[in-house]
Amino acid sequence: MKTELPIFFSPFRLDPGNARLWHGSQVIRLRPKSFAVLRYLLERPGQLVTKEELLNAVWPKTYVSDALVKDSILEIRRALGDDARAPRFVETVHRRGYRFLPAVTTPLVTSNQLSVVSEKSERRFDSQLATGNWQLTTPLIGRDTELALLRGWLDKALNGERQLVFVTGEPGIGKTTIVEAFLAQLGASPFSFPQPQFLAPNTQHPTPSPWIGRGQCVEHYGAGEAYMPVLEALGRLCRAPEGEHLLDVLRQYAPTWLVQLPALLKAEDFERLQHKVQGATRERMLREMAEAVETFTAERPLILCLEDLHWSDVSTLELLAVLARRHESARLLVLGTYRPVEMLGPGHPLRAVKQELQLHQQCEELRLGLLTEPHVAEYVLARFAVGAHDRGSLHRLARAIHQRTEGNPLFMVNVVDYMSAQGVLDEENETQPAVQIEVPASIQQLIEKQLDRLSPEEQWMLEVASVAGADFSAAAVAAGTKMTTGDVEACCTRLVRREQFLRTHGVSEWPDGTVATRYHFLHALYQEVLYERIPAGQRVSLHHWIGERVEQAYGDQVRAIAAELAVHFEQGREYRKAISYLQQAHPAAPSGRAVNGDQGLVSSRSGASVHTGT
Image (cartoon, rainbow, N blue to C red; front, side):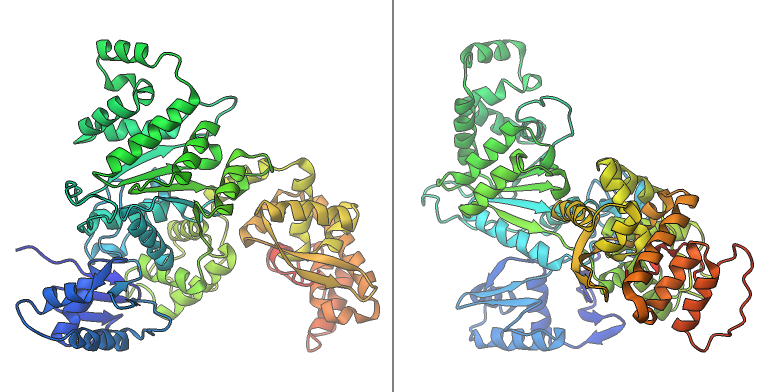
């Protein structure tokens, strides 16, 4: 007997086998027909389901009014706490039907083969660093809206409205994860493609599954191979089952492309083709591929996934622009990932192509944001078996992890892995969350690699900023670098524009009249790695210089920042000043505290993460 897997849509779980809807450990009651309507929608996430389709599926061979469908939708919305005016789950498509919005996470993505797991195995995951692609073993958290957007763009593509979508975000944000999860949903929930409006009535009905081509751009030094990721995707498609048909299309419409794939041809065919395309121009290659795409997408949709377009050759970007600009119908969805940090200069070819396409509304951009604290809590709770810790402790732990990682999925996953490997999360340890969250070596290496891309001036400025605090004023950093405040602001602004390490955080005004821009480290882990790069003796001097500058700026108002000055002077080895400011910050503290050499008075670890006002 085949077991029906549960369907997860955070924070709910639908159990088809037992006909129950769960919210955590609570059963949500639904009438049988309403349950059937919800299940039907869940099995088609992101798809428009008409009222007629629901009536035929849930009330077959029965003459009933579509008012029954409305009643069931109302009951479902009440059960889910949904609002028709601002839906999170069930969206009404005026006069047509309904669409289920969030990501449905059954089956979960757990390997490169996109295998399925049961509810019991869902709670346990192997080390994220043990796989070739860490994202594929991570449960997808906090991306329901983004997945719904991707499915909406796919719906447009299926109807002949070609789509080019750039998926972007900082390193580790989960660009590959969301693309893989989106494709996994298509494979896990088979659905019938509608007859596109642009096809003639006598056209053969399309095959009920899309071509999915994958290509990878790689960082190269010097000139790269033209069209490399597209040729890689075409080669994989032609070698796949039913790939012979694609080969026939290329022979007829794009011979200049097929000759670039000699491994797919017999020797005599290759020689004949070489002679045929001799002297072909770049313009001919672009035209041929545009026509070939339109030909085979009339029979079967194509999803083309190109990773790391920031490393793409110029020819590939030209092809994407041509495919996006043509007006002929094509059931084509191109998903291209890129990192903004790699597009540093204004002359980067991807920047120019993307801006031109955006100007004419010929592409879309999906920018992934950081995970929220509830998302981190959801991951932590999913990662560890219920009962290993009390939920309150895990929520407090999640809060601490979010503060350290700012919700970067890669950082979050590897911090949890590291803590687990160190035994911090053992069942016997019930005293969460007073744990020290250290920087895993894997994350430290990743951050160091990012820092190596910066100029020596930018690296030094960031190191001094890590002494000033997680949130700092450019004027405080100027005191440590001996640069002018304007030079520090210019350096920080360049990093902000490139989305590297920092973001702006308002303006600081000191009592002495100093006005400067405030900045904040994107992640606390960035600040800690930078702080640890500074030699111990140099750290002492930097804390001393910054402390003295801020003390001078605040004059007789120093009590407002006494705690920060206490840290700076303690780390700067000026213990008597540190004690004085500590007593001002905490008047109830004893006045006769002894100073024992180099023993710290204020912070239990480096002062890197405790400053907030300088």
